[in-house]
Image (cartoon, rainbow, N blue to C red; front, side, top):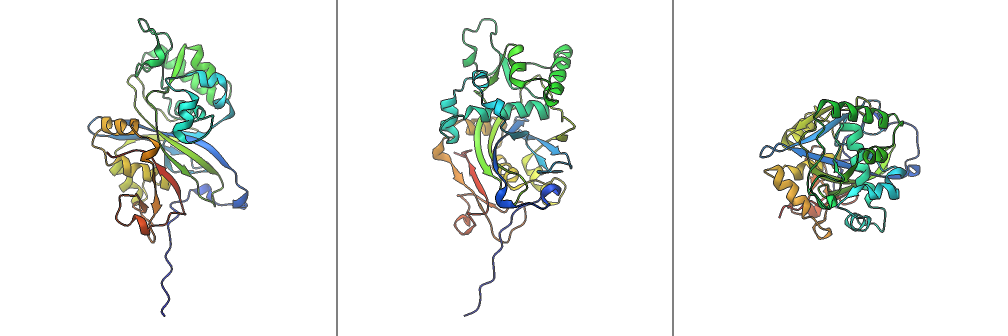
Length: 312
């Protein structure tokens, strides 16, 4: 009997910081959160940041705003600062017993630190009895004095001189938990110098704000159409990790930002799709979804990825 050729499954792109002498089995898996911020109406774009080449993890790669969940994201004070979402509901949504709200706080904090966007609204707007029920009303940072003040806040938060939650509360604001939706979960495979159990979120770009990379962790930002980002990844112009590409593939299936956000808002655990990786495919199309004809013959062990962004 002739031997069957060995099939090889892609592990995706590696960042410049992925080398070094370390024991892969000893690398802990940290909780993390990241946010896809959409804009463009009928011409959907997503905000992407380019990581500093010096970063140990995903250096020189394009990502969505995000990072590790910090202990301060899980405090009672932080919980109380998120409007429209309880810890019980947040925890159920992402499949843990308690502490789920910390992932939303981390996502919103990192968005402020890395991209200069603050998804928060005033706690006591005039004429509104219960601001926690507001679906919108994100703070306008466009007035010059406000922009300058919050830019200073951001610098101080990034420098560790100012607490993010206390900054939000000092301005009589609440973080927006109503319009930031959980859409997926990916776990960094064994072998990376850092590993994360990352929850992915989605929201629409607020009016009256402009993204700006922090020139530390992120050195550049771009608004990109999903198909363009996938193409640029394929030619090496915009290198990304497998989870980033996977989310772009799903985003590309929606014709408008409104449709993409509405789909994210109706996602439930019943919509969860476990992704697989195609064998012998090193390109951006190595990810197989359950509705793909070759899904059953793809590898289900290399990447731990769950998508909750229903198409129908």
